[in-house]
Length: 129
Image (cartoon, rainbow, N blue to C red; front, side, top):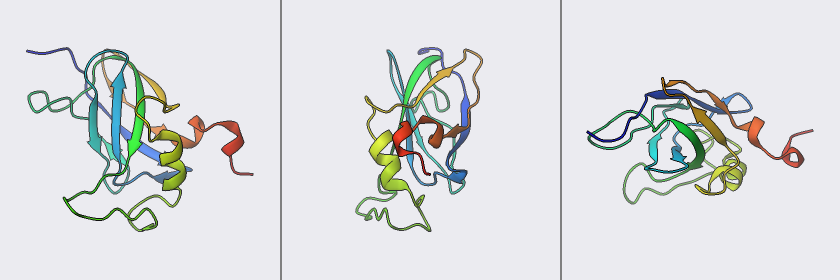
């Protein structure tokens, strides 16, 4: 049957603009991570496994954000602001590491809507004037 997982959905934004076409990974303190790709509006719904399609293990998670090709061999152009957030290099610098991202969230046992505004998790010295 597998571990208990709860459905979590939400939206990733940076300064109110969607974090579209990024891979969002929820890594729990122990156990298997869950991940998915956001849509054009930054919406996400992580998948646990092929057997348990939607959900994350309840508890504390470090959330990381990465950019990967949507199709094999497709180039990733972070300057393509029609596809990616204009601040994608900054987003990847701060949130790109699965074990060092400052983005820590608590996933309740009942699951929930979890909208994430990345600006709130940036170190103070990176805030815009």
